[in-house]
Length: 113
Image 1: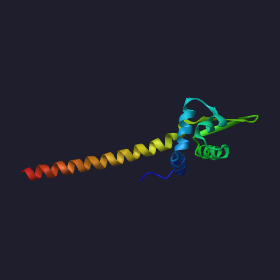
Image 2: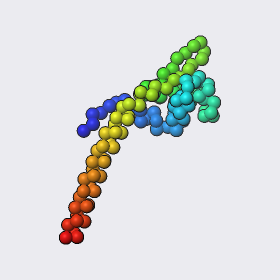
Image 3: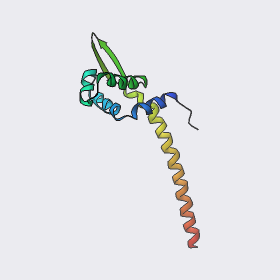
Image 4: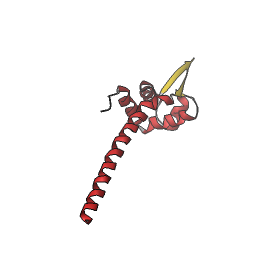
């Protein structure tokens, strides 16, 4: 059984929203100011700030402030727990499907005899 990772829930929650995913896509190119991230969304700044706080709480971004300008940057290694969990799930399901395939092939073989 996979051990429970509380950060995993935060990651999935953060990535569940399309606005947050688009912000991460933008930040994958280069760090950006909050106002630059807010512009294409059409959302008000406080709403975008809430989205950014969810991303930051999940560890997916970092923010820095220089005067009145807040800049965000992506933290790609923060996705590692999610990647590990997904790889574990893939291995479990591939093993189950392999056993099912073997069972079906054996049943077909027996019915032909």
